[in-house]
Image 1 (cartoon, rainbow, N blue to C red):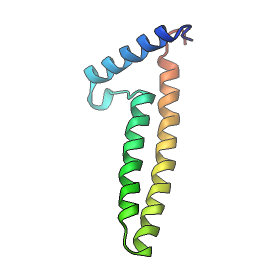
Image 2: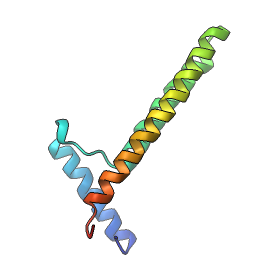
Image 3: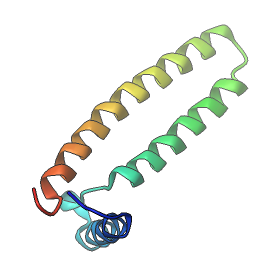
Length: 90
């Protein structure tokens, strides 16, 4: 495991750079980046939910929000597993 916050920060920065260099199917998003993207998706869906005019639209968008959170939680778990394997000292 990484001992100090500066070591962890350096490691995260190296992973970000690797992610950018690799791209494509070899990209390995960082947990922090995934969290940001997840929050952006949730925010957009919540805005659509607030703008919904019918109960049917709200119900549909609410189910989409629930599915999004479940899907992204599974993805976050997989990303964390990959990063734990890639972490120095693993």
